[in-house]
Amino acid sequence: MLTIDPTVAPSRPTTASTRKTAALVGALFLYATGAFIVANALTTGVLSRPDFLTGAAADTTALGTGAVVLSGQFGVVGIAVLLFPLLKRHGESLALAHVGFRVAELAASLFYLAVPLLVIQLGAGLRDGTVDAASSTGLGALLQAQHGAAILMIYLVTTAAGMCMAVLLYRSRLIPRWIATLGVIGYPVLLAGCALDLFGLVDVTQGVGLVALVPGGVFELILPVWLIAKGFTFPASPTSDRIPS
Image (cartoon, rainbow, N blue to C red; front, top):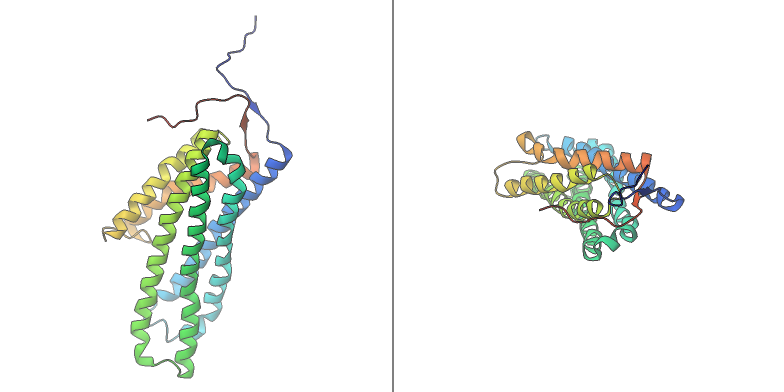
C-alpha cells in the first residue's frame, strides 16, 4: 500500500503573477550586474593610463557610455521592492534591511558614477584652458582614489544586501536551498575580502583579491538564470526555516 510521509512537504507551482515577478527580478539582476561590469571596464580602461586627464577629451565616448550603462544599477532597488512581499513573512526586519541596503548600493553606485562624469568635465577644462594643466596629476590621483573607494563601497553594501536576501531565500525555500547556500557562503567571503582590502592586504579589484568575488559572483549568475527559467517554488506546508548552526 502506498503511503505518504507527512514530513515531506510537496511544493506548489509558481502562480502567473509570481512567475512574472521572478522573471523580472532575474532580468534586473543580470542587467545590473552586466551594467556594472561594462561600466567599470570602460572607466578603468581610461583611469589606468598615465596622465589620463590630459587625453580625456578623446575618451568622452567611452566614459559617457560607461556612465549611461551604469544607470542599470537603479534596478537593484527594484529587486528589493519586488522581493519584499515574498520575503517579509520569513523575516520582516531582514526584508526591510534588504531594501535599505539596496538603496545604499544605489547611492554608492552614484558616487562611482561621479568619476567618469568628472573626468569628462575636467578633461574638457584642460582642453579649453579653464583648468590648470599643472593640476592634472593631482586631480587624476584624486579621481583614481575615488574610483577605488566607490568600488569598495559598492561591494560592502552589496554584501550586506546579499546576505539579507540569501538568508531569507534559504528560509523561504522560494529557490532550491543549494542555490541559496551559495549566497549564504559567498557574501561573507566577499565581506572578508573587503575587510582585507581596507587594511591594504589585498585588492579586490585585481590579483588574488579577485578570488573574494567568485562565490558571490557564481550565486548572482545562477540565481537570475534560475528565476527566469523556473520561477519561485512555494512549499505547500511549513517547514524548518532556520539555517543550521
